[in-house]
Length: 466
Image (cartoon, rainbow, N blue to C red; front, side, top):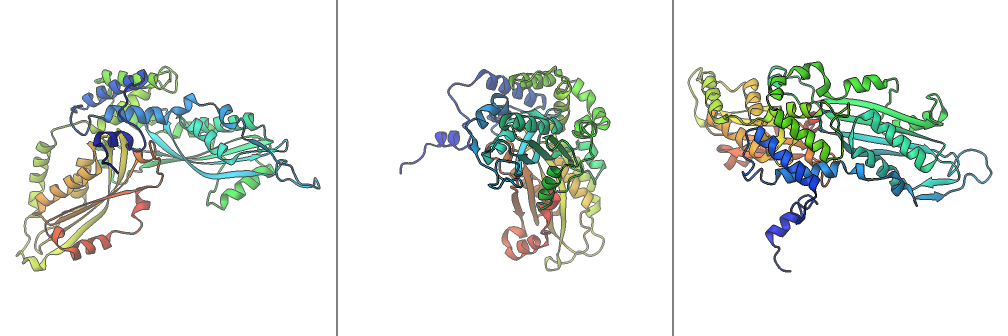
């Protein structure tokens, strides 16, 4: 085989999405231009290596993530209805006459119409066939995905899936349950003050038609009973109004007060987000979208570029007194390993302008007689580098180098993270997790020390990230 052209390779394998195209659609160009305005508003250089292709990546991700606007349920369901008779003796319900069919655990994502951040959802769909016909099972997932790939709110998404299936396959009834998970991204001030910040908002919504219309109907009992096999317990008393009021963190009164001055001072950024909405085929004046540009800008400003090195020098000097010896310093052989585990972080992928989040584990050797760093100081360093446009590899290195410069060298850092860009674009790998390691000083030459630190990391770290 001949060698691959490097430029061609980059075009073809960018997570299954071609980046360089000879002719771009006007909507893509408009989104690119808007993203450049947003990056410049953050004080970034749009021509630096890590950001050169970011506008195009963001444009393609957004257009791919909202492709549902151009899809029709009729095109999916048509030709996928198959004849299936009921029971031969006519007693009971089965097959194409009244036999309940459920597809569970459909992992999907959608974009929140209030803040433009992706949210995850697990979809469960059930229907009762009628007319001696059934629909191809994959079509239930595809119909759900059509409506998920639009700017959405949970309840409307459930209603649209239910209505589309009811009109498309004409069953005796349809039931839809969505388990939705929205990232609650803190701002830098609040996360430093609140160490117990809750990173997620979870909502469960349902929608139904036909024989599922009565919540006490046998169809509902069967449907919910089958969901319990998957560990899903449904409280159907949650009202639609309560879902709408509690869903997106950007709608809370506390969030509305945060950085409002900064948003008002950046009208170009707000206008750029409105331009993105129009390019996606939406109306920025639709009542659900009127505040969306401001919400998105308020969140994005968390990652505004500042003179980090100058601030860090002051930070390091301020804590140096805490590291003074409290007694006679022992030899290297008497050094002790210290560790701080599960330090939370929140950051923003500079390649796609999408969040990534997780935990940081820091290990270091410190001679006896030297005060070791407290958890709050290490957490501050983690947040210091997290709240900026980042890549995980750089974040890991920067944390390790900073701790090393304070302590004198022997440091190991492990970062475990979930990347929104891994689920909301391209390969859509739900549940994937990325780990990176940086080792300095003794950890770089001592496998036993590295192994000792890795063993100290708890097995349930992944659950702490979610």
